[in-house]
Image 1 (cartoon, rainbow, N blue to C red):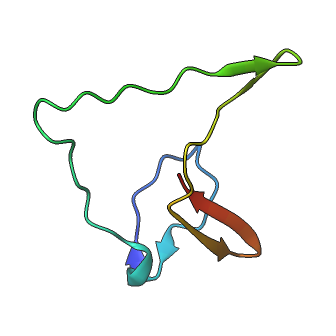
Image 2: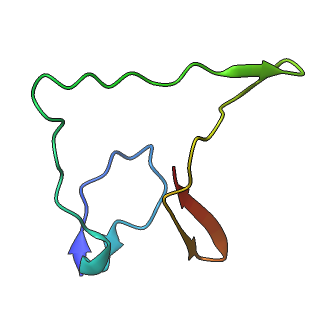
Length: 66
């Protein structure tokens, strides 16, 4: 188990299993991180997904790596 140091405004339990902790990988030098432009439909922002790379279910919710 790992205890996280969190801001008091974050209301989650600060203790997590070590399997949920991953090493931070910084962006490669020179690589630009450009977010995709949103597609506006019915006055809401949406993003088009080119490809789903992976999916998993966490606590009953589907999560996708796009």
